[in-house]
Length: 326
Image (cartoon, rainbow, N blue to C red; front, side, top):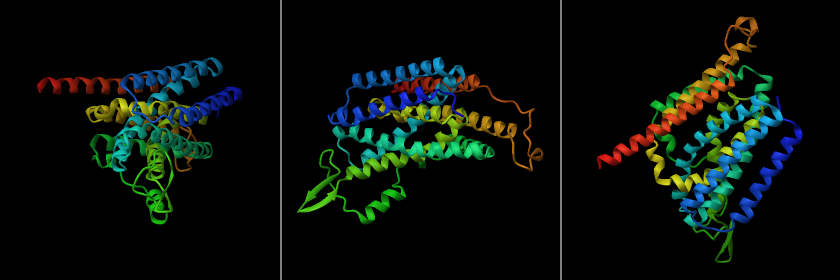
């Protein structure tokens, strides 16, 4: 399924691994609240890095994988903005000091990427053996799109998942932070600090969001390498975006509509592909239906750019009109 040369993939993983090591053990060890200039600079750097990576992919593997990467990266980046709503709530619920929040996000996002990697490998194995899983992925994305537009806001409320509740039931966890330490001592007894729970809360909660985003990107590419790198580049600038957008998140009122259009489009694309490559015996005798059109990758990219761009512009216009009325 992979169309990218093995040496390029190995080199990519080595560079990305080095980046996370530097971010966690060197940059992350300097607790501070990033300034607006620092956030904008870092976000710009990661956006340019993603664009350059897509260009390199185009050179070594061709236009199709590169366009698939750009489509996947834009989709994942847009969907990851939803994560910020929950990250804000998690930081508030656990009273994480402002100076430690950048470090917490670095670790949490790294945990999320490792868990997503497992999820991606499982998804790739499924679609390789069972093409009918596209029907499930496609239907799930269509339901998610409808819920984004007409559903309630319950998903924006943070609720501790089962893993966090289980940890609390048998581990001694203190009420206070001790800098970046995971363990601390009170009255001669060793406790875990809330930092451990926050790391796991962000990492595992992000995986719940992956149940929407991973099926979406598998609708754009079947290459696990492109799926994973799209996720990496989408999450890389998320911590700076967290500090930059902060209070503006609730003002992006039309973003859910744009995301719903993208998810619905990819959902339909997956269903069409499932019919085109059908193996279910009760549909056309287990044969694919050639008359069903295949959606080209460039059209997917165009729909993503127009949908997300239009919703962002509409949100900004709405925000300015509200401010003008005050």
